[in-house]
Amino acid sequence: MTTGKDVFRRNGYELAWASMQAKVDNDEFYGFTGVDYEEKLERAFAWGMDKAGVPRGVTKGKYSVEGSSIKMYKASALALIEALARKSPGGKSYGHVLFHLTLQYVEEDISVTEELFGCRIAGAKRSIAQGPDAAIDEIPITVMYAKISGPNIQGLTLFDNSQGRY
Image (tube, rainbow, N blue to C red; front, side):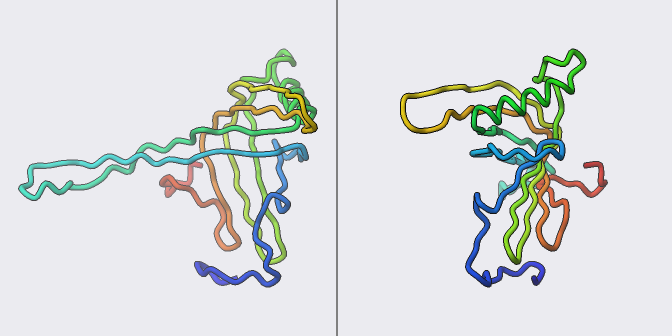
């Protein structure tokens, strides 16, 4: 695959839900039904005295990951919180346990990995309704930062990672 060039998919397969594998701390979980997160880099203009009213520059910004949650079938959500609770000092509290979430999409000629670092469970939305659908829990999470790796470049970040700390 050529770097920085959009290519025609050989067999027409685009990355989709069926292409995905999800791991929490390298343990594969199969009951995910959705993952949401939004990266932001909030920049501010630096204004100066200028008749044109044009900013002098812009800050490097403040990075954040917001609106993050995972959705899982109830049995898988229970397996996740039990696995996290076992890592806590008392073996029962799962809300303060740090975990790493890896999402990998693989098709014939492309592989993309998204990683969420410094994750913690921040709540739970559990519901059940009459009908044929399986019960799904939505679990809000906090995320410190995210990275994406494409076929050609590993560890791409929205924030300035030139010092290589993250």
